[in-house]
Length: 370
Image 1 (cartoon, rainbow, N blue to C red):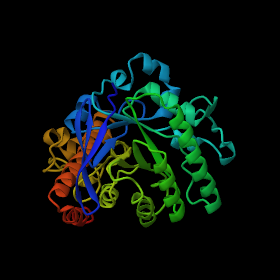
Image 2: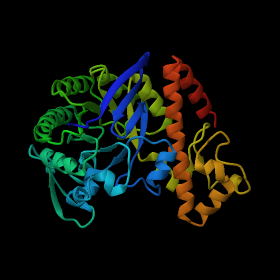
Image 3: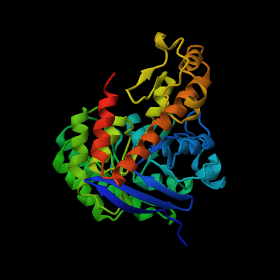
Image 4: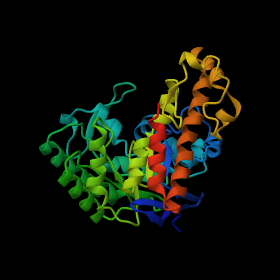
């Protein structure tokens, strides 16, 4: 019997959606922010800390795990969940985004992509079939079709060819997908071209995936263009399937995504900015290295319920960062992830109570009041 996850849409407030993902690990509410655990770990955090911050789905990266330790080792360990001891749902990307950052356009063919390993320069070749085969072995609950994420800005002609190839790759991947416990998502591309976004969405939906991702955003375009990219395709995605906006984690961008009907978001942002001494707050990001925090013996946020804010002060965290102690990065990472999961809790409540627009406007007003 399949233990594939199921999604149920329970409530809408205009286009904002509240739903439930039912899994063998329990039920998880959407909209949801998913932390990124590139190499089968969310940087500096343990699975237990992720549970404490109310994280649901966590991502891992197909490309990096393919290279080290290799999908066969993870398969022998019993899959990603057992390998890293994470007992909640997981998602793997296709490896495409990393591949295309390493490959040149001339290295992309109908068959797949040639590129060199970022570790040792070894020549590698990734195809839609190979990406799905690796992900089948990794064993995440949600896996992604292999797609091309073209550079921005690119020409209409290049994007059109890329969209058509991505559709062919999606079919090839779907044809070889053989793990009945995994949801396979199709990915909508099309860049900033509204007709290509629409075409990509309609044709991807025709293939009948378990959920749909919006790709190719947050790759250098301005915010207005990014929101238009979502607008140009989301209305063509089925109401009863999960909608996932890839690589987006800025609080204001999440709000704009929810407004348009997105259910899942992911980004390395909360841990990345923590490694650069930054923390999310209700009044915008702060840099803890700032001299004004030298004698500030208050938490990052008085209203935050995370481990960091309940136990440590800005002055102490600043000291840790300045002397390059890893514990400082850990404390900021814990806070930043909890900031986003708490924000998602509030978003879900506001949708259930038909006041999402109010919540969004109030959040933005405070967040921009630096």
